[in-house]
Image (cartoon, rainbow, N blue to C red; front, side, top):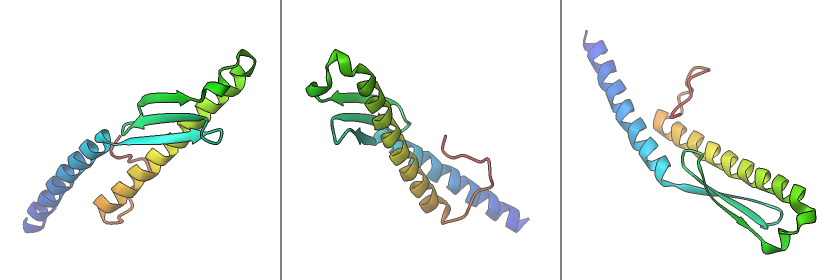
Length: 107
């Protein structure tokens, strides 16, 4: 029974740390760029797009398809960075313990 109580205490501590990490991640912003900095996308810590900055040189009606592709590329870049940061924070939180396949924290 003592081991079970200890396990429950550890689980409670882990839950508390997870909540802290989620709060920390929701407060950060990540910037993704494409087109040599001509398009920048800023995401919040949960992957929500906060802003897009487009170089005025790109606002040519003949270049609309390229602009759309650059926006998608910038978002993808920012999302990749966010996922990597989240994974790093999870590694710190779990002490390097690999979670079973299919368990995705914190989202």
